[in-house]
Length: 445
Ligand SMILES: Cc1cc2nc3c(=O)[nH]c(=O)nc-3n(C[C@H](O)[C@H](O)[C@H](O)COP(=O)(O)OP(=O)(O)OC[C@H]3O[C@@H](n4cnc5c(N)ncnc54)[C@H](O)[C@@H]3O)c2cc1C
Image (cartoon, rainbow, N blue to C red; front, side, top):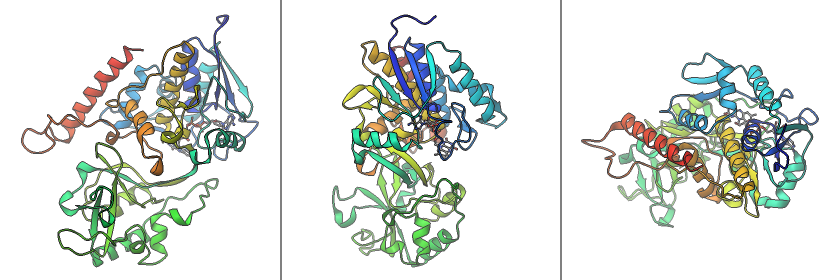
């Protein structure tokens, strides 16, 4: 028996985010139409017709809370995730990671959803935006719905490919090798960090870049390279000086220590207000992760760099969230239309289901006459939401969970020198603070 007169909402997309959103709504007494287009319409990547299909790797990454992905999982468990307990039940041995038998995982999710009387699963392609509803149609959203999104949110709000440059942590940079300067001293004058390379260093770097091993994309992922956004290794292949006249151009960047422009420069642009995350400007890449580590650590000053996000280039339909969505990822002109999953500009399985969970919770709150809520940016989930809200729309790129997103520790905790807690100690303090703040936020729900 379902409660008579229960509010009704539509969730579009039976992937990771959509299933979490539907579950969160049903738990709060909302009747849900969960609409999935497979198998009537297929995506280029999904193989079957089950809900919550993992399209590629079978890993949800780390479960250790000292790892950003592990902390996000711990928060989601406290928030009552549907998918993570299914993943536990479907787990295969994978050390400190949560990896699953993908068939068992999808079957378990489908069984739980099927047994929930408030959720009805429909198989159809949705071509208009629902309200009240959650749109969670993922990186391979169908063409007709993409057109509806463009009509509603404007062409500038949608991207179809991500060309992601790596992001590194500031604390891992050898700053004595770098200098702060904007090209020709524009803007704040010292908005960028610059890693200068002399002629020999540049030659070695280009040689390694050209020879490095590249990720072989899937057949369905034939990313057309745009001239303005070529992978850095492809630019290097076009000629030894291409990068020196492109993203590694030293013009207007005289090193204040020598008064001369170096042979080439790698620029790092601040990614967050606290200055914890720095983006390697113009370094979108398809190199394998180990190759990114090896080759990019050849850049002077980046020898021991910690990567917060690796570069990639993929087919990916996603919204420019800071441009077109509100604080809790609802449409700016309709507080009852939420977006969730990879299409909001998060990157990864756990991040996608996390936004589904919160979208479902918030739509249920709105339907009950309560305001939406988001955890504070000292927690991993809250920090992801802050990124989606505050990132620069002009340079917006999808983001995975990482420590650079989280509020730094207060100044009273020394970063370096005597009495400083060290990297592990700082991490433990960040985790403890996140756990406390998440608990305090949960108590307000
Ligand atoms: C090829 C590929 C590989 C990836 N590999 C990984 C990986 O290994 N690890 C990782 O962490 N992340 C990976 N990602 C990124 C991301 O985590 C996954 O795409 C994840 O599945 C996103 O979850 P989601 O719920 O947002 O979308 P999805 O899981 O894709 O779910 C969206 C659902 O919406 C349906 N749909 C689309 N349009 C409509 C419509 N108009 N009407 C009704 N239904 C519709 C689709 O059929 C799909 O079932 C990958 C992405 C891609 C594209």
